[in-house]
Each structure stands twice: as structure tokens, then as C-alpha cells.
Length: 411
Image 1: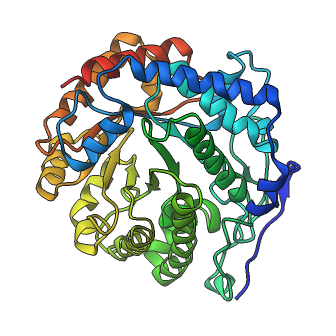
Image 2 (image 1 turned 60 degrees about the vertical axis):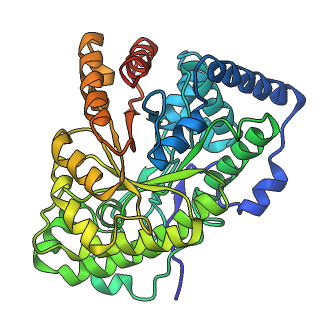
Image 3 (image 1 turned 120 degrees about the vertical axis):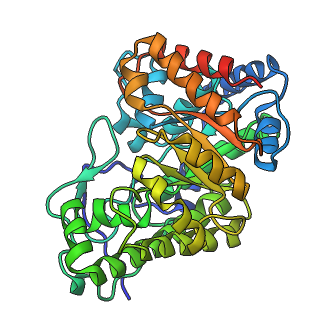
């Protein structure tokens, strides 16, 4: 078996270093320590203004107990955090944080403090574009992108391939260092007991194959004409996501994590096997980490998969704890009934396009509808989400979104 990595064009000085190497070479100056201390002080001040701490509210939600309001979960990429760090001056670029991962830590602390977010979200900095042999490149504002043809064209291309090690390969050692460093800071400034940290091990195995191994068009064609090819590639992607999911919690030391899901972009009938791959990931990660893990769904068609996912074991106490419904998903009555019947967690988030475009009155109306739907679930295990927050979302729209979520989330 072999690990095959593609080239990463324009990579920074820490790319390719292992997690152990990063721990040695990344240290903080006194000036940076003061900056971090100030962000943590502001986060503490934000927390003190509410009835419950974010951690109390999070634990009550996961346990189905009463709380003062819904948890407000915010999802944003490092590109948005970097914009917040420099006050939307458009001077610091996303690529700077990917070159120098200390900027990831500072920008996410700054964003959490600035907008009064109630958990620290460690957003993905790569989806593994180069992990199975495809060439990729850094861009100025965004995660790495593919550079050239995708690497898996035939089933023979999969022969002998092994899932990489997230502590050594690609951007993932930097991501794990980022998560670890946030935990160290939270411990030092006594935030660990009052605010949860969420990590990511995106994206789902089918989506990984479609986006990074054979391409969306070829994946959809092969689902119809060469399903064994899709199954074998998806199984290999699952091997990778199991390694990453376990590492994010056990090494990244997060309180909970999520994995994006692409079910819903194709029908259930004839593709039921995909639910089994999600179950394999969910059960393996949950067995190793014993902390909440969540599906994130964006396609309205994903609702058709609820029963199939449950039957396969992809949803449940020993697998993924629930689903986050974002974007186009709006059949909340179906989701509510399912979550209540099976005592699962759910998160409802309006479209990122709405948070970007507005107007504010429409943002408020949409958030109220999501909050009302979430509060109808009798098991108390639902939250309101905001995101994924677009790079161009203005501070005014972000402030209005948070204010509306805090207002309408009250129980």
C-alpha cells in the first residue's frame, strides 16, 4: 500500500511539516501573547452578559435539558476570520494565514470576540485536494484549489492507494496544530469550561470522491454506469475521513465536530450503499472519540436519506448524533418529526446567500422562522445556525444576523 500525494503549487513555509515539527517551530512573542490575552478577556466579557455560559447551553442541548435559549452556531471560513482581523481593510489575505498558521489562531479569536460568537469554530483550511495524487495550488483568498486533471480516472488508479496520515500530510498537520493551540489558549485563560470548541472533518466520502478524486460529472456518470468504481473510491475516502475524524477530536482536542454530507445530490434508490459508508465513518469515529459528531446537509434532497441513514447506522448514539440543515433545506416538519422520534440533535441555518445579500429585514424574518422551527422540537436538542458565512458578508449584516438569532432563539 502507498500514500500518493500530488504537488501543492505556491505552498508556504510550514506546508509538509508534521504536527510534531510544528509544535517545536511555532511559538508566540510577548506582543502576540498580549493580543491573545485581550481577545480572551473580551470573550469572557461577552459570556458574562448572558444567563448561561455557552458551554452550559451546549451541554444542556446535547442532553436534551432546558436552557435559556437555542445555541447559536456560526460557521465561517478562515477567509472571513482574516477579514475581521484586519478590520475589512482587505490587507491581510487568506493565504497569509495558510502560510503562517498563527494568524489562523489570532483571526478566529478576534472573530469570536468581535461578533460575540458562543463557540470557537475551527474552520477547515483544506479538503484534501492533493491527497490522492491530484495537483493543487494555493490561492490568495480561499482554500487550495485543484490545478489540472483530477487523479482517479479508472478503477485501476485506486489500486495500492492508502489513506494519508493527517498528522503528516497535506494541510492537516497545520489544522491540527491550530485546534491544539486554541485548546491550549482556552485552558490558559480559563475558557475551556465556559465555551465549546468545534472542529471539522469535511467533506463526506461521496463528496470527497466527487470533488477531489474523479470529479462531479464523472462521479454522477459512474453512479449509473460503473457503481463498483464509485463504491471502491468512496470506501478509500472513508478510510481517510475516519483517520481525520479521530485526529480532530483526540489530537485537536475539540468538544465536538462535524462532517459535511453530499447525500441529496443524487437519489437514494440504487445508491443505498452510500449510507453504509457514512455509518462506517460515524461508528469508527464515535467509538474512538466519545464526543458529539454531526452531519452537515445542504441539499433539500438529503431529507429523503433520513430513514436510510438511520437504517444503515449512520445516525444514532453510536454514530453521527444528528444533522445540521443549511442552505436549501426547508422541510422542517419532516426533520422535526424525525429528530424527535429518534431523540437526535438538529441545527437549522438560513442560506449563506441571504446573510450576504440581505436586506436585514429578510434576514431577520428567515432567522425567526428557523428559530421557531427549532423550538418546536420537544426534545430540546436543536440549535440555530448562521453560515457558512460568505467572504463578502458585511459586518453590518453579520451583526444583524447575530442580533436576530440571539433575540428569536430565546425560549
